Length: 407
Image (tube, rainbow, N blue to C red; front, side, top):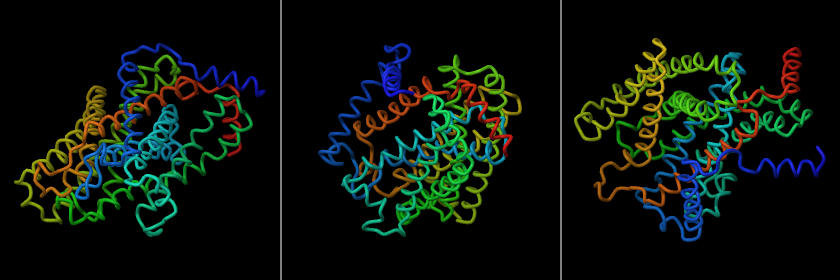
């Protein structure tokens, strides 16, 4: 593509597509703008100007929701790439690009929130180079996993970018890297999902016994599987409503079958997770804690937001009840949010009086909403321009057939 033509193409693609004054835009745009102002204010004035964080509660909603929860919701990317590229289950291929894109954007926007949460944000390089605390730190491990996994997701999604730009030769090269990148990305993802649990383990004296266990890394990893798949179901439902005109007929015809299979996977994984939690509870001999306020809250999380959605998933899959499946997915998403919040500030230093505990300020909430809306805007911009739901160009399909013959 000539430089002049490329410039005109890019300028044309930057223009809005579709209606501008939609209800979503009218709500989200002011929040994004206000969030940008508050982020600048926070960087200039410091954490204390916009947050309720303190020495007693150093982590708040930015870490609990944006990082811990957001990364768990991105788990669908490594699960589905494993299923499609390693297990060769081509049935799930139609939703793969959207899932990878969602995972990549989640890491870019949510993991990037760590930058805002640092008291001295100009020291952001310290976790990367291992300064101050050394390369044996869990934070150093998780930071490099995040960086490398974001690069892996970008490479996995890059064939769609090459198709958008019409770069046939580059697309062929990038597609040849997919399998190796997927294996590398799956390894990274399984490690850093558990690594986030490792960060929590450092706070052993401060976490309620009902939540603390040496198996937290395993629980974080297992929960990321059904969290990611529940997000795939929810995001897919919304995307098919909004971008349904872009989806080809073969995708539409197979989508219901895909949702049923995802529901079965969620139900099975959630039952395994519940069984692990039950074993940890029994071996920890925590019966005395159940008849306490924190015990009641623990049962709400484990029974109300794990076991019950698990049975709803199984019921919905067995009877092809898509309303039940979507309800279970939303309950599961809410349960993951509660679980991560518990580890970061609800079950953390639970013995401190309620009026002295951490509650997010309105500015923290606005910044969090701005990040979420900005990610949705980026997702929508890419979907409307790149072949994510749309059928790839014919030349790309021919390249894929040639690669299959060569294997």
